[in-house]
Length: 274
View (cartoon, rainbow, N blue to C red):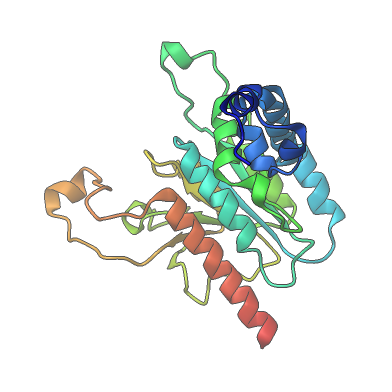
């Protein structure tokens, strides 16, 4: 029998039934206007879960006696999309058999923004961090050891010194032309050079932001300077004299870090299979 039009219209105006809502997926439920408060609470919970203080990171490192520990420190990140991508892939590319391993992305700023409109704002902002967690798809990750996000209010140097004291090998990721070739800076090697100890139990990659190279004091503190071999364009004498660093094509920040994480995982897997 045909359903009268007015009961159907009334049902549509009344909205979905509680039974139907109960069977909707959580992600869809969060997008409904009626669950705005619940969604915000859920995102806030995710940000708390996926964020550590630097002290919490050190505590976890000291408590763990097996597995591997991998950190990525980014000095001066500008785009949440790059950091979110790195967080997502850092969890996926954890070394084999390292379910109890530690994986963390540390954000710092040697030169925080100076503009008046952001002079009083913290770096990175809560909005930036919220977007990082959202882009990392943290809500959908079910890995045993998700990557943690750590913000460094005191800049990168104290954190790197502390990580070195905990036994971390510090590897700078740079463009080849931006590496410092002489003392007191560490040796410069390609990312997949056998001399580079990417199979160390504790390792931290150090990368500059999208708009700047690593500061010289950070390079000096690292154990190695590494670069990803790529196409090179010869610089003329004038460009060499002014220290031109952007003449050669370069990789996106997220792409470069993910390649480094993959190479670390590959070397650890090779060591395990040997």
